[in-house]
Image (cartoon, rainbow, N blue to C red; front, side, top):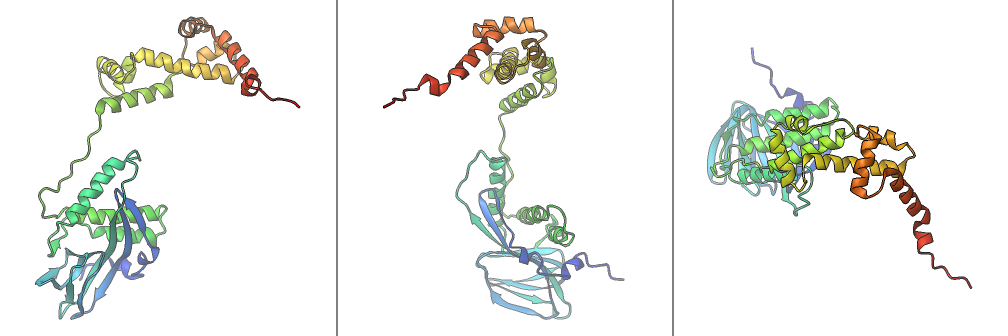
Amino acid sequence: MAKPFAYALMAEKMDAIDRLDIQFRWGGYGFRVHRCHLTSFPAGKIIRFHKHSEYEFHFIPRGKGTVIIEDYTFPVYEGQFYLTGPNVMHQQEADKRDPMDELCLHIDIVPLEAGEDTLWGEQWERHEAQMCIHALGSLPLAPLTDQYNAMAWFLTAYRAWHEGQPGAYSTIKQAIIQILLRASRLSSDPTVTFEPPNRNMNEHRFKIATQFIHDNYASPITLQEVAERIPISGRQLQRIFREQGADSFSAYLENYRLSQICSAIVEGASPIDQIALEHGFASGNYLYYVFKKRFGMTPKQFRAHQAAVDASGPDKKGDQTTHD
């Protein structure tokens, strides 16, 4: 008994994904999917010599046949794939006795102008995409074994559409990227390797520590508690704070608490003792001491001063209106 054809579902509506006009950006490239479908060749079917300006990936999930790429003839079998294009002349022929199925991906890959490198994940993503496209350009013009199972992602993309999955577009996009990545791993160029960009770990740890302070400054927190969450020693964390331009952990924590307290004093009418407790100070008296030492005035004086500044306002301070 023949085993079920894994891609039979895709035969229900072969051009389903072709109709979606999938376009996306990945790293420094733009991608537009022209065709992503299953097609079947009856026994002996010949597709005469032709070429495409876009990339064309051919995967053979079932059957066998022959492909002529430029001047070379190759047999192709189930489990293989080959890349033609851009502008590679080729001819395909199904076996004279047996039909052949093909999963086909036609896709434009266009370099884009460099964008902002500050975007989320941009540096790493640009690197991955660049390495992938470089590797695709180094694939030999010959059938290869799909040893990284790229063709399975055709079915992932089709099911996302067929089942009306939430986020179907994103699933299809990621499936296309996986096809490209897994095919590119068969590059004949040994210099194409994955070397992800490294982050500055001390800068990263400082960001983790300061974000924890921002999220929890109103509670009693210690240097050791924050260090354990990274995790590094308290001494290492103290050194990182100094390296990143902060005097110390305790100074950074106190400065942030005071900045939030100043905002609370200006924005609301809560008693100073309540503001102190809500922002991590043990008592109003201790806040008075720290606040006066830092700003040269008490919290109440600061509130009065700010109220006076707001009352004067820019119009009253700079009113030079003349009257006829």
